[in-house]
Length: 358
Image: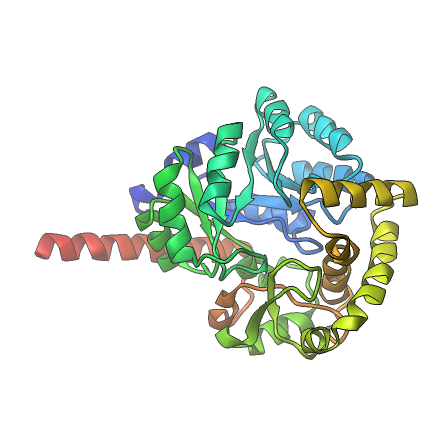
């Protein structure tokens, strides 16, 4: 049994039934059943990315995780998916313990899951968003600062987390540029009860991301990322590759590419044309998106698939947090979790000893 610092077992650990306050986020095309099960088996908690799966694939992946580990795990869902109600009903029947969301959930979704005993954890990027979902009755939030990968807000992590923890009474997981045990200790100092990481787990042994794509991440430095709206109309952080620079320079090419991506995404997720149209209407209404943004919305998952699945960084994008610049290897998820907990424990002990000496 590891002798980790007792302060690292925060109240949210008890609620989720986990040993360590670490979340592996549900990254599209990356957070597979294999990675999720491996993460949860360590005592942290992994989230399966179902937003890029068909309903059948989602069910098969959940069953596989349940065969691989008895520990709690979660699923990440698209709240604007045409079959979201069916998916949530099935998740309740399947005994899913935790649900996170790829977009803001609707209040009725939160109530439905909460009434069934499922823990709900949306991701937010601003203080006002945290206040809103807390009023809806969510159990916790992942507060992601602008250093995070993929879609992200404007506020730096070190500013956002203290803001959020001051205004809500629910547990907060800190995210955005966090990769190690010192980041966990910093998050606790800001008032969070744990951390959520994507890039660190993307670069793990269990990650199915092709070797050549992982190598591209390793070769990048902290300043090689960019927040851009050219991919799908919403700011997201990616590696500033030639592909991204081309999108920035040739903005008039975005819409033809987006239409092609939408059709590919429809095929990949087994979505009918009528459901695709209904989804577009819902996105425009519920997320206050312009038709231009709706047209671009399918870009991100398909351009991400090109790299994370197909291994082609010349036509795809590489979502990442700024933390990629300090990651140099891809150990197992068990080694990642143990290293974080060990470093955090030592950091807390060093701080305690320094305080006692003074």
